[in-house]
Length: 356
Ligand code: FES
Ligand SMILES: [Fe+2]
Image (cartoon, rainbow, N blue to C red; front, side, top):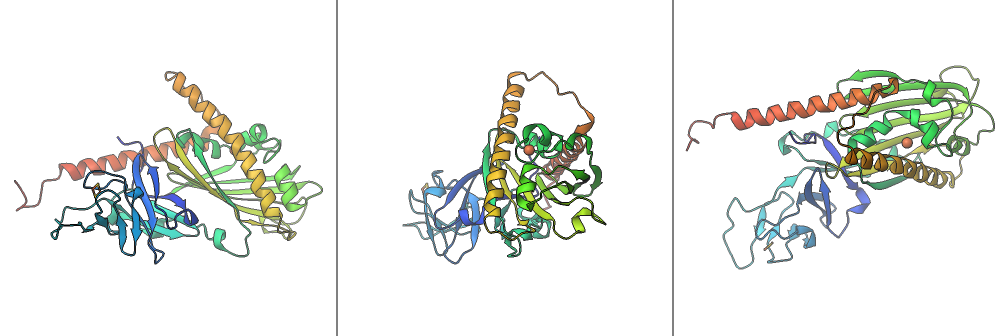
């Protein structure tokens, strides 16, 4: 069974990464070339010319496609070969694999599965990232760790108290168990903490001088997108904390794209709303998130190294693992379903008339 769910959208790149130079990127173990035509359309193809297997990412972008640098064959965004220098006929089999690619909310989303099943209504809504009312920031981390270990980390905020003491943590997380609610596309986690000391990052971003009420509204979108609407507001007001005036809100998304079984592209975006308008705050948030995510990377990559060195050792569960175990189970169920679909497709008899 392949290690990755294929029929879903993954982030391939930040939109502004993809301009007039092709990008070669390994995604789910497949080498892909991303490029943008002069009219602005993005495209994703297998990064391997069908002629002598040179990487297309070394080629040149033209108005109607990408030209291989080796012998000059040209490929349309559909993957079809549209020119062979010195040869008039182009066989219908001449081409490379094409991947559906959609640009939305500053991100390029790729579909690595069956192209005919690509449905862009399934792309997770990240519209805050391009909403001018939400100052925003973003980042990318290349992880020497499998995506599931990063997912485990994001699904258990009890680590905030220990890993992120100077950034995102406060002492309340281990005791503030989230409510967990599964739904068709993942799980929802809800957490409230009243009358607590704010984390250093929330104190700075909200300019809070005293204690706060804090909320998390999180969604894990299978297989690997984490949405976290979190915030703080001065403690003690009436009504739900996230509905009160004067709060600091963040709409964070961690977008995990497996590179290989053991490495991951980690994209993140973080639109914010500040109670006090100050254009420098978003830069301070970026510095805080970069620091915090470096703290995560160090412990997760170390965890992966230990797991590699001791393949027979098995983790022992605690109650805080509930959400991450649910997501692991749901992703494994999805993988099994895709494997069964592939098997059924390969076992099905050819239509009459196509038998050898
Ligand atoms: S390898 Fe690409 S045209 Fe020959
Ligand atoms: Fe973390």
